[in-house]
Image (cartoon, rainbow, N blue to C red; front, side, top):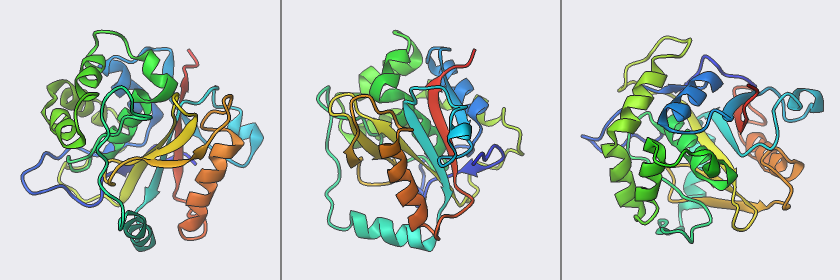
Length: 254
């Protein structure tokens, strides 16, 4: 399920005049370099997930897994299903320390990879790996009390985030596309909340976080309960599209 030569972008594009980033390659080394540059401990890293159905291959991923990034081609069916699910939903207005998860609204074109990574490291138990006083810690502490629109402006204005993303985007093994290019791959992130043990789907291009159900207190995002949610998502799209890729955030192997 590796997609080390793929890049991903947001759908739909942001409003005219908004920032655009070079699409982030779906490469665990690139993602790890990005978050560690921002202030995440070297004890945490991203890892390719080669299979969610073969225990032997799944065993290569260190546990516990704190977040799971799903990269997939945006299809007409996906867009139709998303519109139906969002139709009667009000925009998310959560903020503050009482949130089950922190969600970032995406307004930067081609930045869904970065937003997926941010959602992974800023939620659940992974948050404890952010070094106090680092760029990411300062950004997170400033973002927590803000409403989603203000958070989006904060992300857009962060020079530290832009610099780290630019550096990581140029480190990949594939050719670097232009920031304004239209890319048909998209990232979403699944995390486990430490407040209620629920699995959340986080996508900055949607109206807010989606609660995908309860996980047991000892379950991580690669537990069978969580993987059933992922399998259902994949099976919904073209009967299990082989272009799906998965990357897990988990303890470093070093």
